[in-house]
Image (cartoon, rainbow, N blue to C red):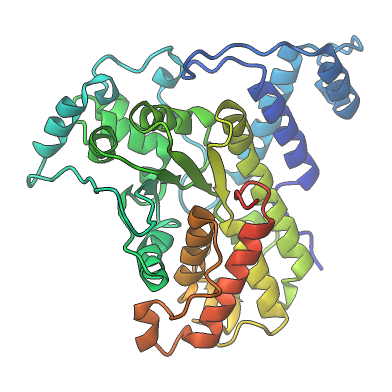
Length: 405
């Protein structure tokens, strides 16, 4: 068995610990009323004991500046390991305006709701601001951003909700790769930085002029808490009861250092390791946001669901699925279809069930009927559909941040 992890688990954990601690001890310029937390000598002592290399001047003491230096050193090393790999960019320059106390004054987020709506409705082919009246069937009104990892869930969630007996109000603004990230969509909608003077407030207009219960985000490389908190603050300004859900994606083939030669190289232990790495990276964003917004931030555990699915396949419990990764095993009906990690055929339903179970805090196992499109398809088929529901509920009910009590 080869050495598989691109990122050393130990290095990753070191970086995560440093990031999380520093997140709680650094004022966030985009946090309303943010205050710097007391710097605990006890925490510095614990950090020094755990990471002696962080003591830059070797004086036997650790300062917060040294801890910050060590964090940046660790992340730079991790980023350098990813350079040169194919696919979407993993490291990129972010506009320095994100470090300022305020966004540019022409940002749409500073305008009144009717002004935001007017800007949006004057764009293109007369787009309309989307709002929904309060549902009487228990549905949540949801807005969301995201990229191609999120689109499968956005597409299947309404069908799953319909099978549950209600119509799903859903309004999204998506894009491929980076263009679907929370940061990119905030800049695009506000008309700032690279979009200066060209605002496209598709969601901002709806958020400011309508009522919503939830917002959903997808993750992206180099995410920082402030890329989400700007959206969250804007939503809470107009809808104080809203809750926020961040998907944690899933393991990718490019996490693996040495190329996999055959699907026999995949093991349950490997997927548990890759899933743990994904969860650790997700926590660097989730933990600070959960601290800042108590009882508002939740994880949609698609990563745990795909790890469970991979383990189920290896135990022969995914009926109709032929392989784990099409890039490796060349099987069309695989969990993943390309090196980047897009889902294989049928697995959009698993993602949709994870979305549904997290947002509605209920299992889809007991649905009386399959979602309408599945009734006309030979694949996934009824048995695999039931297995997807079971996996989704197992992932959601066991994740500490999915909200199940």
